[in-house]
Length: 533
Ligand code: G4P
Image 1 (spheres, protein in one colour):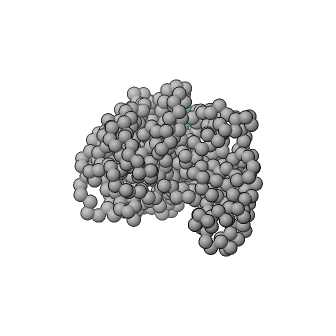
Image 2 (cartoon, protein in one colour; image 1 turned 60 degrees about the vertical axis):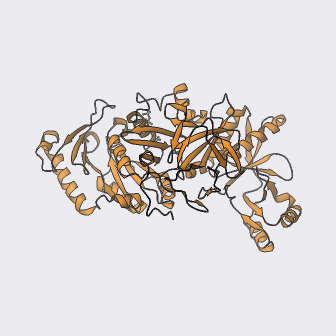
Image 3 (cartoon, protein in one colour; image 1 turned 180 degrees about the vertical axis):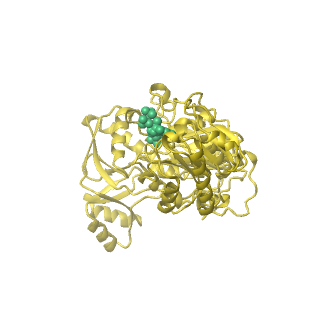
């Protein structure tokens, strides 16, 4: 548990930062909402740019052909923009149901999550899964119930469903007026305002009318009598039955405020953004060994939560995405790469301003910067101004699916090895080289990752590849005294592979084999994941 008590007030530059991700089920409206965030953040001039096809789109939040072809967001990226006094850092999570470890790791780099649900569908499977990950870290969650311009469920029903399925208190920050075609807008429960949606102009910000409570006669000028009566009844009931907003409970992850709106109609989005500013947390302490890192520390510390290769096919660069955990970073700084104990001059860091990558002159705790490198930086690495700190809690998952992979052209095996090693370092897959025989075995968490890999290997390396069933279904890392491991390797040659670091992995089809090794070799340790260090 992070200790957040007795923290001194943060320097204003850090306190104004809000670093968050959006979690949702595909199709709930994450892309549309992101686009409106960027629009109001002044990062794009016109709605439609994020979804734009072709070149315009490639320079933005996704870089992969597959994403364009299939319209799914596979890779995560980060975007920064200002809203009022706040600096928002939005870290994009892949939304497809068959996602990779990336998604989980992304959530280690944020301080809060915005949960988007579709007003007609409620809490869907992917939302539930991602929510559980957020809960593991007690991340504060703000909820946006989208598509209120369409037929949607009863407001109490939606709130009940969230409370029951996700076991979190829900407090309405706004209350919808009318449904579907009759949806007029919302009553702002926190500020006593009437927000009216403009259906004629999707990009127009809602008209906001200050009123004096629900008995204000001004309401009658804007809301038909039947809807007004219903609104009064429902708000009264909601105030009686549902908990009032408790900012502390929100910060602790026990309560989520919910805003109702329609991203495509730009409705409710600014209220949500104001909510992120007001109730979303400032940069939080980061757990690390041997001590936690506090954002207000003068010295810079940060950690790599994602590595992406070939972001620009013209340059074979890799970009390590670093979340700054403390301090004030300036371009050109020398930081200690704790794993290798070597200093690194960070001369060309990039900030992901939504429109494009841009050279970062400075950054503060809470920000995400990209550091181009040639493979030195790996997921889980910590960078500091000299202290030996290791950020903890970056998950590594056991590969649940294994497949063999071969180059379509056998002459290209070496190229394939290079491509696979790169993806292994990115954390996009686990790659094993069997002790006996040729070819590689690739391990992933979700089946879609095989497709993603095949598509990337072809696109980025010009290598058509074939994935095929592997004779193995499970992989376990073997550790112990050097002589013991060697002895074990020699006696089990058929089952041994090496991962991209050259570490020994025992592979099998049968759980029974694993149980036997565990029983017969107390001197060895078998693990389903390898620590990310
Ligand atoms: P995702 O990233 O969560 O997958 O969702 P995305 O924003 O792509 O939205 C999914 C679909 O829902 C899109 O329609 C989008 O236009 C629509 N949508 C988003 N917000 C709203 C809303 O507030 N009201 C309504 N009625 N629809 C909304 P599409 O037909 O799949 O794409 P497109 O043809 O509109 O581009």
